[in-house]
Length: 97
Image 1 (cartoon, rainbow, N blue to C red):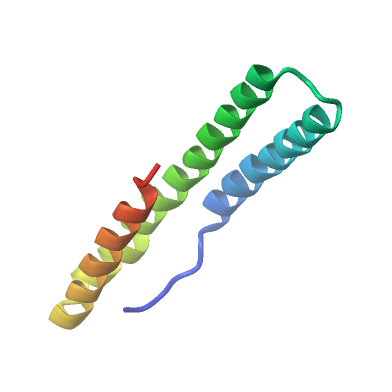
Image 2 (cartoon, rainbow, N blue to C red):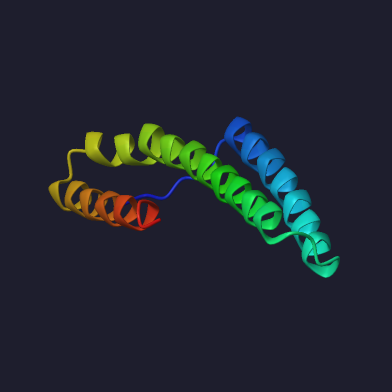
């Protein structure tokens, strides 16, 4: 299967989201260092998880729209099978939470 790079628009979106998440994680670190109330920290951890899932969704959509579609349209049965196996593995890993 041919691997393609992330498109510029998706890359910019994912990068912006990850930078916000980085700030959230720094805030979490401060909360822990300051000994803040555990439920407040856990609430922020849940927010970080949700934000990471959002980045994953953006990247999964891009992968399906471009990479997977190209592999399936290639007409190569072996590439189609490898792509199917890869997508199933990604879905399994992505839904473990």
